[in-house]
Amino acid sequence: MNEEPQNKKIGAALVVGAGIGGMQTALDLAESGIKVYLADSKPSIGGVMAQLDKTFPTNDCAMCTIAPRLVAIGRHKDIELITLSTLKNIHGDPGNFRVTLHKKARYIDETACTGCGSCVANCPVRLKPQPLNGESIIQLAPEVKERVDQIIGEHRHRRGPLMLVLQSLNAAYNYFPEDVLRYVALEMRIPLTQILRVATFYNAFSLKPRGKHLVNVCMGTTCYVRGSERLMDKFSDALEIKLDETTRDMQFTLKSVRCIGCCGLAPAVMVGEQVFGKLTAREVPGIIQKYRTVT
Image (tube, rainbow, N blue to C red):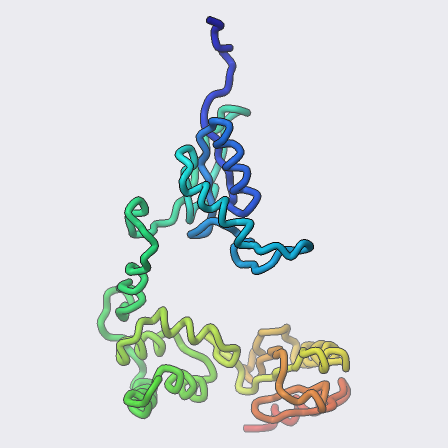
C-alpha cells in the first residue's frame, strides 16, 4: 500500500457568503468529499437571489433555480451552516488556515428549530415594553410630561392609537425625542421596537431634531427634468447645509421628496405646508428670507 505524502492537505473548507454562488461552491466541495462550513452574515441563506422573482436575461424563475440547492444543502451531511456570522480574522498558510468567526446570538436551539415562527410571535422584546436600564419610570420635564399625557389621553381609546399619537407628537416637537418615545411605550404598553418601526418607516417622521421649517425639494421625474436639482443646490448654498442637515439656528431642515402631487407646477418645493410651484433658483433667497422673518 502506498503511503500518503506527508504534506498532503486534509481538512475542511469554509465558504464565506451563502448566495447562489456560495451555495453551489459548497455543494461542489461537499460532493468531492470535503467537509464544508457555509457562513453568511444574514439569518438565512440564499442571498439576493432569494428576493427575486425572475432572473435576467432568461427570465427564469429565481426560486426554481435556488430551491433545489437550498434543499440539497439542508440535507447534505458534509455541509454545516453558520448563519448570522461575520469573518473576524484569518491566519495560517495555504492549506492550513485557522479562521475566527463572530456569530450573533439567536437565543434559540437551532437544531430544534422547525421554522414554525412561535419564537417571533412570543418574543418578549417585541411584545413587552422594555424600560431603559431596568427603570420602570421615564423622567420627563413637567411641561413635556403634561403635553405627552394629553396627547396619549386624546387617542388612547381610539382605534389604531399609535399612529395618531405619533402624528400629534410630530406636530408638537417636529421630531421624536428618545425619552418621549420610551415614555409612550410604557404608558401605552406598546413595545418600543414596534414604535420605532413605525417612526422610522415614514419620511415625515424623524428621530433627529429638525428645524422649524422643513424645506422639501421635489426630486420626482417631472420636477427633476425641469431643474429641481439646481433648486436643491441653491437651497443648500443659501442655507449653508447639505441634504438632510439642519441649520445651526434650528430654523431650516433641507429634505428631498419623490412627489408632492404638483407635477403641473414643476419644479416644486414645499416649505412647511406651503407649495412653491414653477420655482426658479433666483426666487430661493427671497423664500428663505420670508421664513427667517416669521416669528
